[in-house]
Length: 241
Image 1: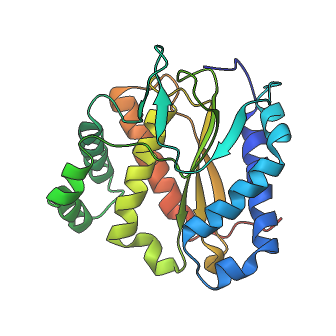
Image 2: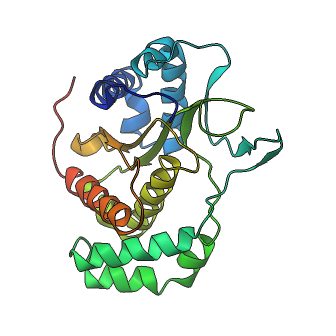
């Protein structure tokens, strides 16, 4: 990875603090249930203002050439060729294994499991998953690894009931699987997190996800545990900053 040591907890708390600052500044975005891309855009601006502090928390002193980007879908290989970011290996296989683990541990209902596994459009579209992160902090145009710093995925949930519906669950599972691969050996992001946007029931949160050195069943169980944690957290209040 790019950096040997940094405090994931301190970085998570700082990102959380910035999230609540955004909420207090831009309440109309949340109160009017504006699309999550608008919230992500405004949060990205805030991260850009705080870029030097964010990089310092990663023990990174080089700020020149580091950008905050949204839905950046290209990467550079060692021969300096640009190509679309895709998950190598079988994203579809990981997705199916995670679904099985979710059901084995009774993290999802039998009905949800049946609907997800029998939805061929959902399964097939993830056969070769393109990476378009909601927000990332990185250096453009260099091989993956050294300057892949932070990747964030967001999910906006305007009502408690919608946090548990099948469409929300589909997207959540996809996001966490994607983050697991981003934090792994292919993309080697130093820090990955899921950002929960639920202002109506005050459960906004930043949940850091650590999949470093995890593979196979151990990784799949970790993905399922994070999904359960995020789903449960949707119904718990987070103290405002």
